[in-house]
Amino acid sequence: MSLPHMLYEAQTWLLQQPPPDGDGLIPEPGIQAPPGAPAIQSVVNILRWIAGVSIMGLFFGGIVAATAGRLWDHHGSGRLGARMIVGSLALAILFGIGYTVVNQFASSGA
Image 1 (cartoon, one colour):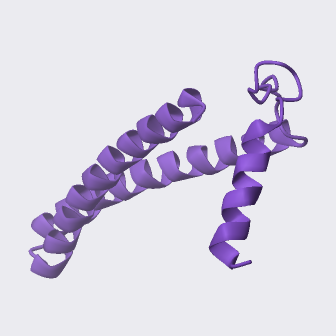
Image 2 (tube, rainbow, N blue to C red):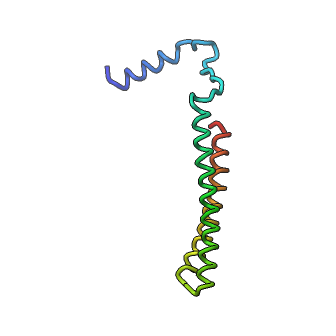
Image 3 (cartoon, rainbow, N blue to C red):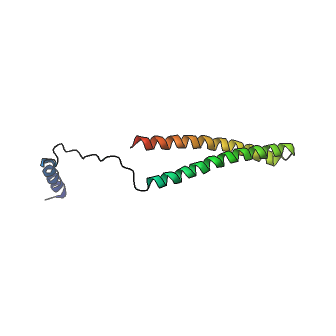
């Protein structure tokens, strides 16, 4: 007996068996949080808070560097401050988008 023939026979035998609970569907368990979920959520909230404060610090540090560079005619510091401001704004946009995307995935349950 060849392997394809054996697979075909096994498949037809399995399809002829009655389902265990009548409807043949796998029961869906209820939603339950994993153990340690509150601790993980608190760590994630602390990291989000640190990231937000860091972005604001980068923004205000960029303002200080750009202002000092312009006041004392130090072009390198002025350019660095401008880059820090633009970088902090880009990070703030990514922070907002990332938070929204993660929440969307978490609430979809898929």
